[in-house]
Amino acid sequence: MDTMSLLMQGFAVALTPESIMFAVIGAILGTLIGALPGLGPANGVAILIPLAFSLGLSPTSSLILLTSVYAGAMYGGRISSILLNIPGDEPAMMTCLDGYPMALKGKAAEALAISAIASFIGSLIATIGLVILAPILAKFALKFGPSEYFALFALAFATLGGITGKNQFKTLMAAAIGLMIATIGIDISTGVQRFTYNTLELFEGVDFIIAIVGLFAISELLFFLERHAGDGLKQVAINKLKLTPRDIIRVLPASIRGAVLGFVAGVLPGAGASLGSFISYTLEKKVSDKDGTFGKGDPRGVAAPEAGNNGAASGALVPMLTLGVPGSGTTAVLLAMLISLNISPGPMLFQQNADLVWGVIAAMFIGNLVLLLLNIPMVGIFVKLLSIPPKYLMPVVTLIASVGIYSVSHSPLDLYFMVGFGVLGYIFRKVDIPLVPIILGMLLGPEMEKSLRHALVLSDGDWSVLLNSGLSMGLWTVAVLGLILPVIVGPIVRAKMRKSKEAVKDV
View 1 (cartoon, one colour):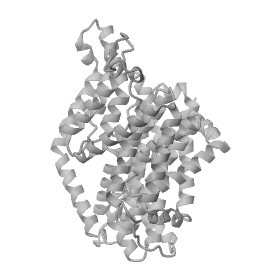
View 2 (cartoon, rainbow, N blue to C red):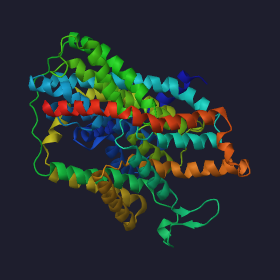
View 3 (cartoon, rainbow, N blue to C red):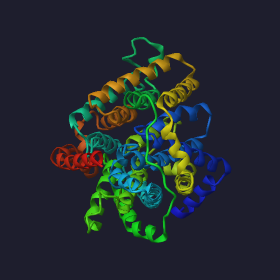
View 4 (cartoon, helix red, strand yellow):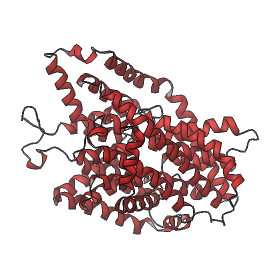
């Protein structure tokens, strides 16, 4: 069956009243979460995963809800960037450079509208890219054996820090911590207890959903309270929208270029939305800034990074769905959701769960349209959230996370684990140890161990089996480059990004 037929079947799933309802709910919740400085899509999805379980949603409904939250949070991040000069999350940082100056000139409504349109274009082009590229990559991945999968997992860990990572050693140390946590429980091959200390609750290992909510959501709540405790944030007033068709046509080329660059950055392991936003803005400045207007309120400087980070967000779903390797922190959280539903991401996903995967992809088209229709006329409502004092808002968010976790297992111990992981995540972030590698280690660790054992069993314990094919050698070569390139190229890219951050502060 060709791709278009499968996509049409996906639309049949996505256009049911239930799917549309969850897409709309997810889009609204995601935009609200994205508008809050610091929360971001990963934390928003992490908070809502237990809620999806507790409501007993089907796998398709759960994924449509959470992918809509993901897309909505990427949209919402621009609101605080433009009105407060505070990025909703790191990918929205580049939007501050021209978005906030536009707001200071009395063009906040135009900046918000342009960013919404650019976000829609970025997500739309990237979702089309996902439709084209994902099946091709899934067919290619069917050639993978246990040796190739082990090399692929090693590649995922080697490229975790990406070009923009601060410290490659800390990234690898965090991945090692995640792999260590993944070994807790009963070894499924030998039946031997590992690091359980005869504690019944640890026999099945550490639930990564609890770890995700703790490390992402609870630690972020602690940081949010530390940074913004007290009153709400004062933002620039929103003027009446005066956007003309000529204004939209002017930013279309920037949006399209940013979308393509962002999609490529999202597909590449370890790159992510931050790099997509950065390179989109950088290229657009070189191409379009003939009069030195960038950084002073140029609409193209808003459109390019917004298209780039939204394109990267959808692009990061490609390796997650086809290879089972997440391309970003948020897709790592979505991967955990799939595994919890006993659905194995990878090349067989497109054959064994075609209705689910194509239904979710079709729902992304619908969700992006919903987001565009919501974000232009209803942006004033979303902005009101920024004026709510955190001392009222944060207890509600904490309550949602806690009730969701407890409703899944009805175990008070899980709440203690959640809080423990939250404190651990808070400490790790204080010393700049990234959290995504820990989660990725917990998620990929069991499959990585299984692939290694399978390969060694087939080869009678001969370790050279890990290097006996051209495909595995290619993956190992890319993995080594993934470790070396950040050391060489990373300082240059990070220096440019630091200059951009300083420019944001100076605006």
